[in-house]
Image 1: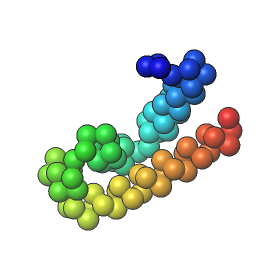
Image 2: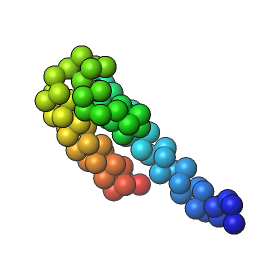
Image 3: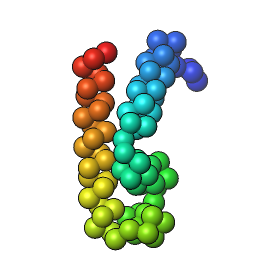
Length: 80
């Protein structure tokens, strides 16, 4: 009951690998704001302070990063 079935665990591992590969392919300026927001949980203001960027730049980079991540994941799924 505590551990997933072997096939579910394999799929989860493959999904994580695909996400990491796609994330690594993003331009650094997009990847860094996406990681700070989605993985580290920083606010837009917090990201702006850490990255020394205007908050508007943070917002536009996040939007572009999310779109590029989405497109990259779709492309990988279509190839796979």
